[in-house]
Length: 210
Image (cartoon, rainbow, N blue to C red; front, side, top):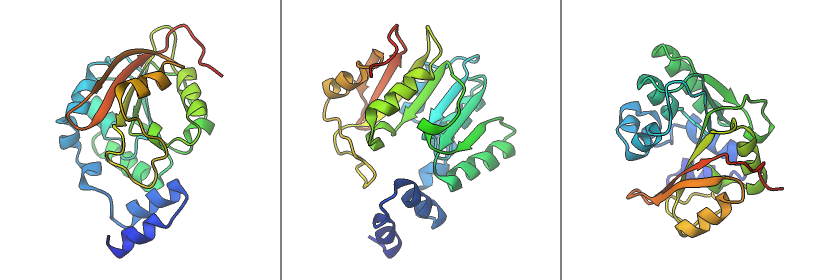
């Protein structure tokens, strides 16, 4: 581990740690490669569930490659991304402007932000970071428009892709399904060759469990 990464690992606050990594140029180049993102299996699957008229919110969007890609594909109505890493959000704003794409990019904490309900919500590589899983998923459920609002999750299997910001692990399909079914109707759940679970959930008739 190089000295800069070792220093980042010492930072306990997740937002501060990720900001340090971005500010010191330690992020993987994939965070900035829109063409590679649009060519990925995860993005292709995501596109199957977003229509051109959907208002879309991505939680933990980082550099917002999913949102930029959706716009380039002509998918999504109003596109909004939220993340607590300011350098990533700044990059998204600048890149969207360069490409003539309208994206509302918000730097802040998801559960505390004032957000408008949406048709489609994206949570890629996010729930494994949640200290309060119940609060987070209730908030997701509350932001989905009835009756057809849907959320698309991407979740690492077990400890694949583990970093020091992960606080939850899902070893198999049934473990993840059991969590999500407290709040949503699980429409699709499968393990991809990338060792990540791809799952699509609909809002359903429930209001989310307390």
